Image 1 (cartoon, helix red, strand yellow):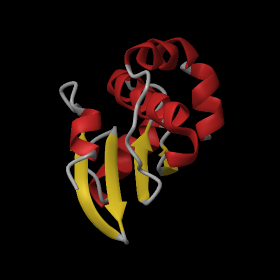
Image 2 (spheres, helix red, strand yellow):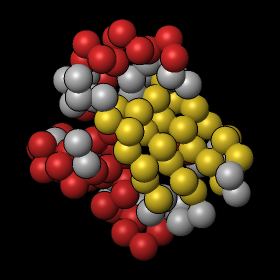
Image 3 (cartoon, helix red, strand yellow):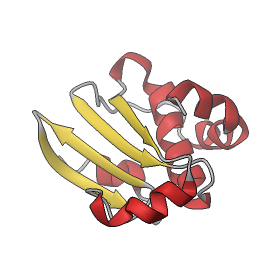
Length: 118
């Protein structure tokens, strides 16, 4: 699944987040975010839709997002031990190629705060 497909699939959730994050001033244009995601995962809907809302809100100051999608749940569950993640969603934020934040499964409503740490 692509980022664009997720934006269509989760449009209501993204719109709900957008209504809460108007007038954002952050600049994440130097941030690369890798999202390990699955559309069948309820935690992914919550976390990834918020991240996609941040991306839409910031436009040219948004982070670069790379999506790694695990749409085949059986494949994911069978190969989970070999992956560099513990769960979906896993959101990895990098600056200058260095990981500075890793959010696994639930940001507890503090996704933006965790991405802004550095």
